[in-house]
Image: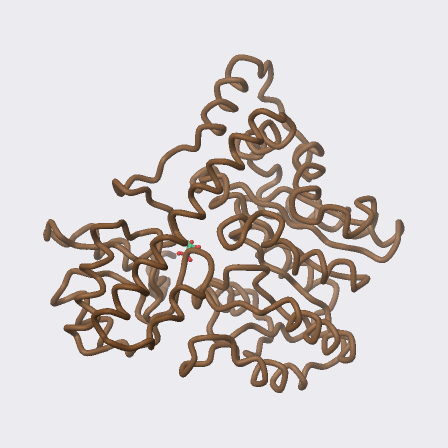
Amino acid sequence: MFAQLKEQPADKILALMAAYRADPRDDKVDLGVGVYKDASGNTPVMRAVKAAERRILAEQDSKAYTGLAGDPAFGAAMKSLVLADSVDHAHVAAVATPGGTGAIRQALELIKRAAPKATVWISDPTWPNHPSIINYLGMKSQSYRYFDSETRGVDYIGMLTDLGAMLPGDVVLLHGCCHNPTGANLTMAQWDGLIKLIKEKSAVPFIDIAYQGFGDGLEEDSAATRKVVSAFDNVLIAASCSKNFGIYRERTGILMARCKDADETAITQQNLAFLNRQNYSFPPDHGARIVTTILNDPELRADWEAELEETRNGMLALRKQLADELRRMSNSDRFDFLADHRGMFSRLGTTPEMVEKLRADFGIYMVGDSRMNIAGLNADTVPVLAQAIIKAGI
Ligand code: LMR
């Protein structure tokens, strides 16, 4: 049986992780996979996470199943964190999922059941797992222009023009903040224009928010999501706790579906629970319990928010340092966009050949589309990267 299997294309980000590990050079720099690293190159367990885990260890008296949607307390805490008061929480169906990827997968399966003919519109570029899962599920997709390779900002006109071709009931997948892979984001005024267009087209927004707290702050990063959620009867929101709680391997995420009324919420909730049952039955609980413990305890929450702010400010400082170094070395402002981008990633905007040159000649690993994980840098490696970019002739 297994002899019939065909080879699968390697995931570019995960293949890069393996190549970096196999590189014997001491001075190699990993700007590949989106994992936060501190100044010493570690991905630390956040203080509040450790404290919550200690509390759970001491107090948890059962490992019995929760429910198909996960612990309702997790759903409530996440609705507050992501959506705040943008919508009546009673009209939001929600299920815990294994990470943000699990939430995206369940959202797409829900779309497939509710609107099998819908086309899912994805940004060009987007996180490679978006088209990969859409194709795997045999769904229709189209891409819309997003990145302006001249300015390294958003190609807003191109985006609106392409999305102008959406048909009623189509779904548009948007990054709530910290666009992956480009780091270029819409302004709030641009979100307003986009909402207007999506309404005109009677399309459905689907927001992937995986980096809340990594851009401009917890509230600021969810502002666009909240705006969208308050503007439509139906919105899908896939949220990840991997990055902002640093619990990558715990696989903690949630899918929320904003519904029109109580009846629609009940049927959507029932379908989401059904999908969880088909795919993995009960979602993982440990990470969700950590998150709930932190969000519901004022002291732990304050400490978590403080550490998240330190993380965010650290990334902003690295962006500024890199843009400053490159301004000095290139004697130009052509890399200033790096300081304007937000989140973990920036797309440098160079060719795959140059990306390969950076890897071969300088031991610098970034994704082939020139996505750099800014959190993979530190104060010492920023000048190394800047010099390599200049020496390579980018
Ligand atoms: C990334 O984009 O690097 C992260 O979201 C990790 C992943 O699973 O690809």
